[in-house]
Length: 343
Length: 109
Image (cartoon, rainbow over all chains, first blue to last red; front, side, top):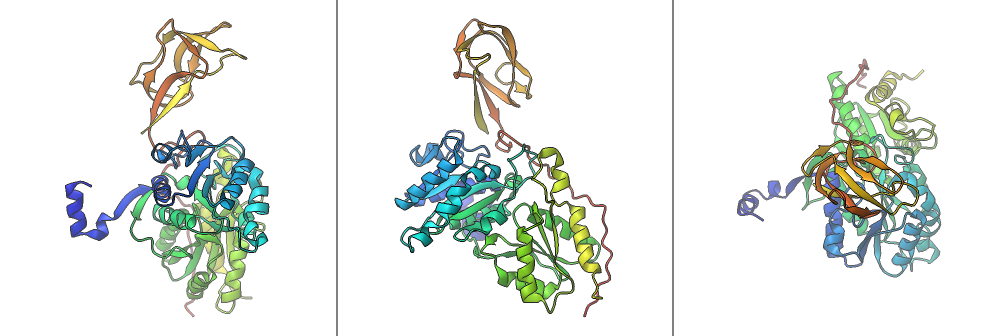
């Protein structure tokens, strides 16, 4: 630490511990710290070692922590997750990476049949302290299979916890938190947000276990997670121009869902729109809408609306803009809720 | 900044080496994807090798007349940390655009 930084910290500890990081850098720093503090942690996956990951999330970690703790694997997702099961059973804390979400499909058997069930199957004697990092969702115009929205699939599986950060601060703290858990956590990183910078308070993560109101508002709650949170914040700004005060709720944990914070928010605003990239049918928006309906039925002014991807396979780059909910589609969803009147 | 090494690929089916004829770029040059990097000669043909990516050339391996084995480093690029990696593009930060305006009469009951 330079002398000037030390002086700054003495004068203003709050400002000094705030640092501007991209989500990519925040995740890298979190992994570095976990590797430094927990000797049982291993980081591995395709290109994680020498290259430092295709998104540079594991950059420099092999050089610093050695190639027995940060290493490349063969191109075999089922093997990566299968090995994670064995390592967890032997007392390690694996943090495997599936290079792109669409390539998690070959490993679904290991995730669902082994990782999610081992603790239950062994009556609690074999917990699976695995944090599976999955660069997730679309928005980078990648080829097929390089952008998917698998949260509903993972969230449906008993035994798995699913979380998705939306900004660098949460990415840093949620990854460290997930890595400290005894349960398997599917950590869905919104890859279109990797390069956006934001303030990270490395000393204080705040509450990490539930949903988070990222913008308070009075008239309507937008519920989103991952990359859609940033878009919903843009929509809230535009809605404010039209006199509509929108609250934006970042769900963060997709399993378990923080039903209490949902109920508090929508209990106040009395209107809700859920936004996600995944297809509409049987998507997580349905679960969120039901939780809201159950707790807020008497106060809701309109049925909970969903603005989502379409019921088609996640498209490749050129069609992404049509598929991912855009600002106008979200605004139209808000308009439908505002216009609703009981017959 | 990160360094990315581009090893000599197999330029035919089962070729094991190529001879450098002439470099078309120098260390320090900024190159675009598909820009010709080097003229090479194999036992089958002479060809121009296009760049697999955009970036700054920081090292080249092999003077004209030298032979390089497939898999050995040919060019080392320097790329900014904020590149998308092997697939995809970094999304641009753009001011939000809208066509839809909200028109709602809020009843405050």
